Length: 127
Image: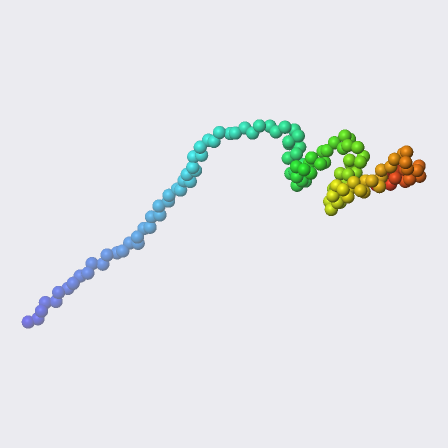
C-alpha cells in the first residue's frame, strides 16, 4: 500500500515594508520667569566725586594723586613749595636734611654781604 501523498501548501504572504512614521515634535524652550527686582536708584554723586572717579578711571591714579594735583599752591610760600618739591623728588632725605639744603638759600640782609645775598637769590630762583 502506498501512502497517500499529502501535499502541503504553504501560503506565501507578501510582506509589505514597514512604514516608518517619524513623529515630529516641536521643542519649545521655556524661559524662566524672572521676578521683577525693584530698581534701586543710585543717588547722583557730587561733581567733585565724579571728577575724582573720572580721574582714577582715565589715569589709574590714586586719591592721593588727585589731591596732590588739585592742591592750592597759591596759599603756600616759596619755601614750603621748595620743601614739598624736595620731599617728592628726593624721598631719601628726611626733614632735617631738607632743612639743611634750604639753608643754602636763606640770607640775612643785615648780616650778609650784598654779593652773597644776590648769589643766594639767584640760586633760589634758578632752582
